[in-house]
Image (cartoon, rainbow, N blue to C red; front, side, top):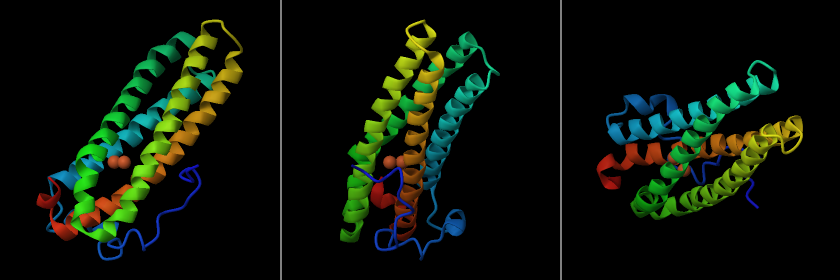
Length: 187
Ligand SMILES: [Fe+2]
Ligand SMILES: [Fe+2]
């Protein structure tokens, strides 16, 4: 079982370039280029999409959105977020992670961790989809809505906690590596 939902930031043993390239200086470094900017942009949009789903759910549970309005917003927002997340992880797994591993043997342990994170996130994502289906079925009359909404909220929180940790740790590995080696080595 992954500890992604509870672990703190990865240590300097894995993020061995982090101290050399601290986050506040990333964007002003000469090697900060389009890929690093794009990577951070994708992560920011995943965080924003996740927050939108949580806000819609909270509005429904607080009574600020009725059931039809909730469904109209929740279903497309959740689909967009999950598809975006899936597509992002697929391109990392197939294209980018192997290239980062090839930069330096010291990268391997960090990318083993990120690989494991992807599996853990996908298990949490499956549980999230199952919870969403149960909630939508309850809204259609199959069972108590409050309980289904509370259950879904827990699954959603777990997924987003895991995702936040993963995105931050991944940034601490990939951005300093691009600054150290240059983007051309990973594109
Ligand atoms: Fe990732
Ligand atoms: Fe990522």
